[in-house]
Image 1 (cartoon, one colour):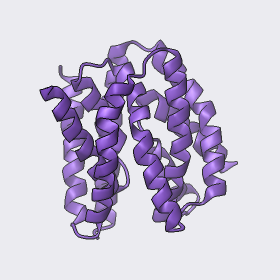
Image 2 (image 1 turned 180 degrees about the vertical axis):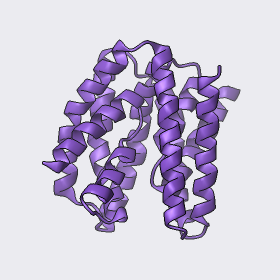
Image 3 (image 1 turned 60 degrees about the horizontal axis):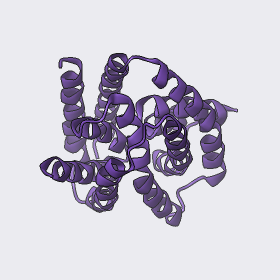
Length: 114
Length: 123
């Protein structure tokens, strides 16, 4: 039952914002169901596959999906993710997390102040 | 051409970030696609397609490590479709500007979440 609510919320936010939904699933599994973070992340990845596919198909119905642009950023990202996973054991994640958080804030400000 | 190269570089960077931190790939795809000239709605729709290969490879790797709870993943994935229908409906109904502002708010929330997690687990 808890999973159903988490799934519905994740699907809604994923489609509304065009992001994976891991940002909804992972904290909810960790906080409300006491999942271990690694297992929550791995499980959310598998679930997001279905979510993103459904979102793509529904948006395609409205003619919003640009496959060429998706390939342009999505395929290099696959290579990047493998590199990132490899680097994970070799870098200080705390500083990187804070740096990435700062980058997101900068992008958000830029979007709000055109 | 230059914009395409920049998009490839940003896509690569988004992948590295998501591999490193386990989250955040999609949050960088949308701004990248906006920079390519897509509207907010199209950028979000296209981002969902763009994350699919990364997610598929990631899920396969995690499966091999034995970390995926497949039963829960299936329940989460299938029920998420209901949420997706609602999300697409709302995104299609909202004005572009509102959608962009909401996305900016989401970035603040994700930034706070990532910073908080880094604070709690200083490893």
